[in-house]
Length: 236
Image: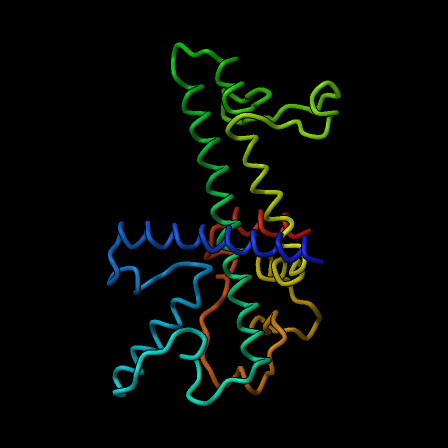
């Protein structure tokens, strides 16, 4: 109903903001010329827009926004919706990547402080929401749930623990497209005769084969494996 629609709009705006902040940071760090050579994973639509519009300008034609730049002919409404879904999933994966990096950053900062001497261990545990650290403070363990705290349903607190709010939002966003997320993150063949080039999206094969496409997600060993693992876990 109306509530579900409002929640979807909020999640979309959250993902748009995460992608926009990341792109502006990369532009400031690399400059437009360098960034356009390699936008990185989960931004295939920017790569395609850049490549196809270079061809458009070389042919003396006007540059087009994505996805119109992918075809020289008119695009059906069904095709537009398929590509819109593809872009949304790409932004969701980018947001999962940002979430993964945030968790890694917080845990790295916590370990750094624990390695300092002298160290107030209990204060750092409380600040980051860590239960304890083992293996010479290199492995952080989150606390067990206690019935005395939120009825045992929310055991995580502190800087690291509070990343769960973003995790919960991403789980809600991934739920309708869980199949596609899992297949993109951990690309197991869906059947014995599946090929690596098979698309996880419901595109018309003849239509899609005429256009060379950039991958939505990189092959597992060419990507940030922890992001792919987190994405698959969030989706299931």
